[in-house]
Length: 128
Ligand SMILES: [Zn+2]
Image (cartoon, protein in one colour):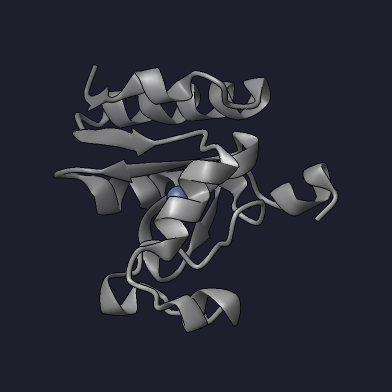
């Protein structure tokens, strides 16, 4: 398979998991290479990621950093699609083309996070 890291499909919401498999089949058809590097995250994992690149004050005040200062996410625990199995992150050689393909298929993306794709409108599914 041209895109590795499919173990991260475990625990995703089944329709989202199937959509990602569809994307991977497309990526494979175009000989695109990449790797899924994140999928479902616990609230504890999300808290750890959210703390990266943030001071205590920035955590308490939920300061949006958009990747600045070594931050890796702007989503506190419970406010990331990853916490509900509704997002994956893809890196690797053809990341930009895979994300572009994902957007064309209908996945949601985040402008400042080049790795992230999510179920569009996922907040409605989880009541956020
Ligand atoms: Zn992500």
